[in-house]
Image 1 (tube, rainbow, N blue to C red):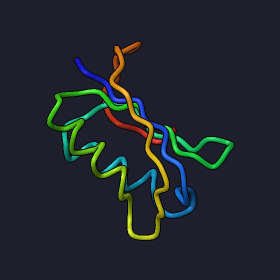
Image 2 (cartoon, rainbow, N blue to C red):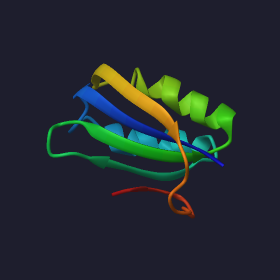
Image 3 (cartoon, rainbow, N blue to C red):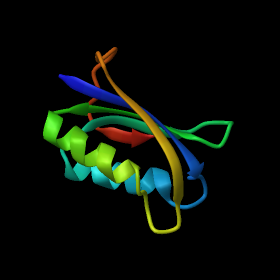
Length: 89
């Protein structure tokens, strides 16, 4: 199973970024989590099939309507745990 670990910076907190990420991930059959970081970024760990990961990664560069994404640093990683769904942490 492929996983995407991404750090998203810009105006990405307080703009429904986590909820929107959850919805996009679920729509693409992905499992994992999304959370805010203390430094203002959003961290995403998503696992699933490559087409779904590509859709999510593409969406992360845009984000929801109120967000302003400055940068997405994403990489494919090995799954370190098994996720049963996609959640906001």
